[in-house]
Length: 470
Image 1 (cartoon, rainbow, N blue to C red):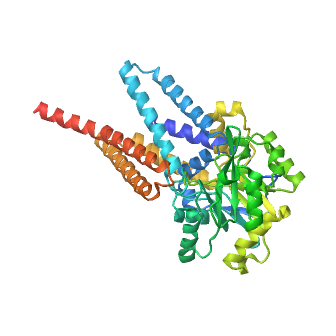
Image 2: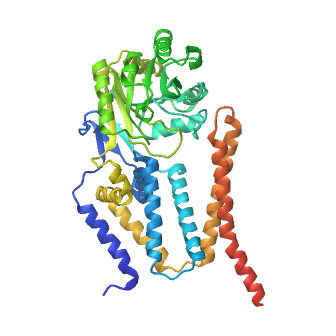
Image 3: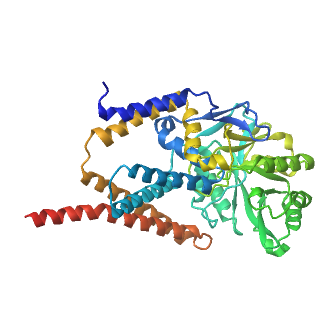
């Protein structure tokens, strides 16, 4: 007879193992253009990622969302519904239910902060050939209005994910992030190849489309060109022999594909991390436009410092890459772009076949959990089993005194305070360019204060009770 305290744990482990046995596709490197397995590449998973799989894997799962807001709201709605459903079995007054709901909402916010801000072990992609190099031609630093990663953090993130070269494309109207990163690379990171770029917005009517200008050496003020992309494209091509790329076109679509291809752009993103992609019909239209006009297809991170995961790389075949100097490597990448050597480019996505539609997103917690757990490998499953036993023992078998829990909440509050102060100190340095650091720092300080109150009040209440009893 299984003892009562172990029944829930055994049930969870059995369910976990049954999901693992279901034959579903595992995450693997996939050609983003053809949808076929990408031969000649492998994903490298550090040992620490296996050890911390419940944290690393779930974070990776959330960062693979295509419609992040809708899928995250689906999770929140189902968590709240589950809370009220389980609460029906318990007799509680309205105050207790509101208090419980408040805890649920706070917990959800804390999970979101964890996913967005916690540095975790990183998966990286490794090509088998030394002449296949991995690039990311769309990333940001604290010099962008929504960036929270410094130029040096941008370098370390890209190296950790296996990138050989990348572009820093800050906005609005600055190249300081790329220039600072290049100086850092000369001193500390000789393997890093950084391309100077800029992200600009050109308007059509009331809406604007974003464009990446790569290989430039001066700030391009799009207002001087009437925000006409054709004029900007001509300038980048003629003066710098650079390239112009259309990022995440599917998000706004103010310009038609025909207008963009006629304007002289050199290529399109077809995948972007955190905005993994549009409906397949839209992506197919982009692919067709690129094929018909001999344009480059790219995958990019659009990394602003949020989250630690990456699941998209662009691979370029460049002969004799290991023996080139840093300047020659940068020039070789720009040459492949501006001459539109499409046969040298591949988009590699760490992905698997899953349904991606509104019905799936409506039931995201169930569908997403099914594909995540059924897609675990042996070591990831083992990590989940070990951590499940540890967590269950701590929660149910080892009696944790309330004072310990309160002290843990206070410790979490101090972490929020320290992270908030870090962002505020960065804001002082980058306030001319950055708009998010001040708001984020204040939000973290607010939640730190809230957690501090939640942690201290029970201790104060208990202390007063002890005094009154005396």
